[in-house]
Structures are given as structure tokens and as C-alpha cells.
Length: 111
Length: 115
Image 1: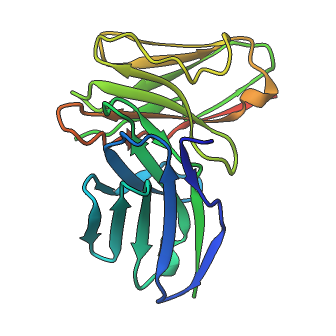
Image 2 (image 1 turned 90 degrees about the vertical axis):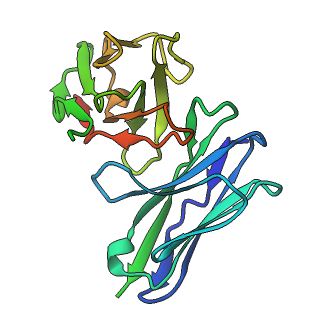
């Protein structure tokens, strides 16, 4: 079992729709959770982090964390073609000294 | 301030040659990571440095790979006797351990091509 799992996609949504990206992790003691966005040919950049159960909103982005079920998700409202990228879920392991990345989900937003 | 820098941006080498990739982290960041990303793939963790602690080398794929970090700042990833399967983008990231959140800031990467 991989430590951090994501559906590789591609996930295709129409412009203006809500894109839902999911991630599960295996280390129950994980404390910090991140979503990075990576455009083709570019380096990953941080979108959001979350460490408490529940929702965290930042503009069009909402991160959701459920530690009991060991999953974290990212919702993108009013999706735009510019949101088309690979979204990487990352989890800080117990003790917080190393972050493990998932393989990423490719998102396509159709104009 | 300046971000993470990496050099060279591109490196083409012949099979069997050694290569050195350099990473300059953000000033003051104590944690430094190396990752490898093959075309269309996710990030493959290679090695992690944290301050003066012994590095976590658990991700290095073979003994041809090594890395060091001098003075707690600049890091060099060395690949000896390169193979074609080593071709990938090598990404470096740094983070500050002063905060709980280990937000990593990535450099632009070095694209390695082994002919």
C-alpha cells in the first residue's frame, strides 16, 4: 500500500463546475496535509495546507480533512481553464520531519 | 527574497559519466529535499537533510546516487556512472522547521538527459 494515494485521472470538468480531488494516506499519526499544484513543465507550488479536521477555505479552494477516515480532499469552485494542472497531495508524517507526496491527479478544465 | 535555485537547468550527459547537480536553498531554511520526477510521473523522494542531523537517504535508488550538504546550506546530488533510466527532472525543495507546517518551496529543477 502506498503511503499517499491519489487517483491519477485525468479528471475532466467543464468551466465553472466544481472539481473534487481526493487523497488517502496510510500513516494515522500524520499531522500536516498539503495540496500543491504543478503546471506542465513547472515545479510544484503550494496551494493550501490543513492540519485540523474539517474544512479550510481560501478563495475558490477548499481543503477538507477527515483524520478518522484518513482522507483529505481539495475542492475547486468555479473551475477555470487556468486551473488545468496536476494536483499533488502531500502528507507530513508522524513527527513532521518528512513529507510524502502522492503521484498527483491531472485536472483538465474545459472551456 | 530569493527562492530555491538549482544548477544547471539542463544537463545532457553520456551513459557512464558522473554528474553533479546543485541546489541553493532559501536562506535560513534548515530542511532540504531532493526529488526525482520522470516524465508524466509523480515526485519520487530521494533524500532529506534536516539541520545537522544524519540525512534520510531512504529514497536513493542505488549506491550510484549520493548527496551532501555543506555548511547546512548548499547541497550537491551526485550520480555516478549514469544510466539512461536516470533521465528525469531532479527537483530540490527547502523548508523552514521553525514552523509546524513543513511547507516546501521548490526550485526550478534540473532536467537530466542521459544518452
